Length: 100
Image (cartoon, rainbow, N blue to C red; front, side, top):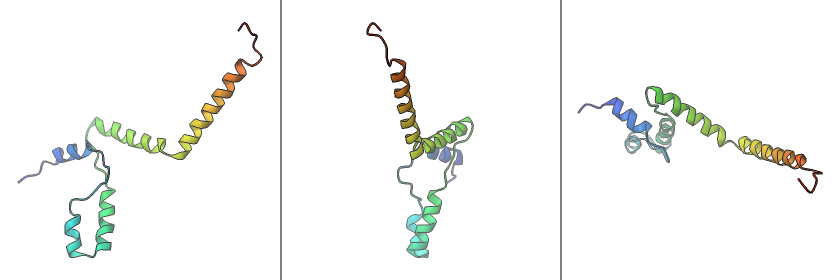
């Protein structure tokens, strides 16, 4: 049976990983101890398969942006921007006449 690598890559790249697992993890524990197999599994789960073509650029950009947006500094920055915007808008109408 021949494996179509392009098809496997396309299928893997289209799925989101919730809890990544490696398909050989059940075999590893037979030949090495559990700690070594868990270390190998963790290393293999960190390997990311990227799609080919132009879709690669968009997928990598989305992953990079997702990492930036989930960082706590991003949340603090936007909270600061909202506070600055609120202060700026309140200063614009401070001391305005009743007619305005």
